[in-house]
Image (cartoon, rainbow, N blue to C red; front, side):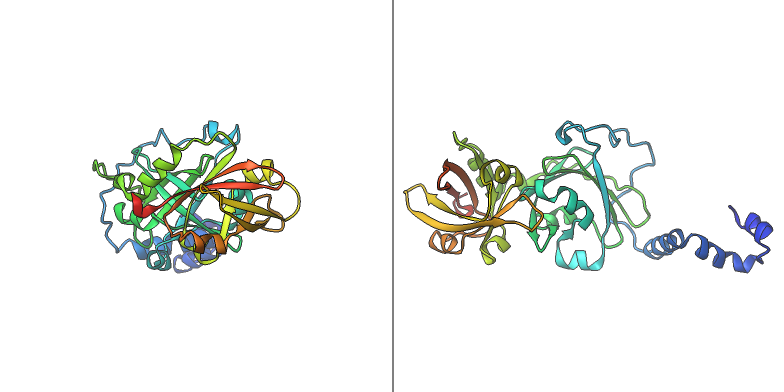
Length: 298
């Protein structure tokens, strides 16, 4: 309804129309105020012409097992820029958190992808290790608006809108995926080449996993191989040495598991960025063989 129509139907004088809009559409008014305020900050990236984004649709993703992809958005706040990490909405975490691994793949519309670590704790999940590089490469600043489409298997399609609420023009530089050649990526590739014969999972160690001495076990592996109540498991290195470790539920309602491994971390001098492959070699008691790919070696 335009201003003349509002005046006609409500009897408000023109100078009271703004008050009416704020009363009837508080969110719309707040959004307009926010973006008008932020529009003064010039975007550091060129904007894409307004054309239909044919690739960004609601088709069912095969990796989602027939489920409709789930979407969420985040407005980048000053705290996000300062802390160099982004919190995933709690409602999304409640529905999909158990199936997220320690690393997420973020893909932008031009096809370039980024590997970003996930920090988990206190029923919260954050985009963390690698998030700073993602923001810097796309010149993301506070006031930007990001839309995430979850496609399963810890993969997200990301749209980036600047302070004018317009989608940016994504960089096309050949070195966009420069982190693929980093030491971390080489360690990950080496771990993937291991191909254990028995059930296994891989973990890229984050600082909190070392500091809090807590290993997150993916929900799929936990459901199939770590059923039952809390229990002791044995972590074994390739030389046959073993450590007793306590395995317990990630949260009260979660089917994922955590393993306390403080002594194992200390004795094996593990550090953030190291990659570990855990292979189930015995069921009763549970024994996980741990292959370590140290970041410093790559």
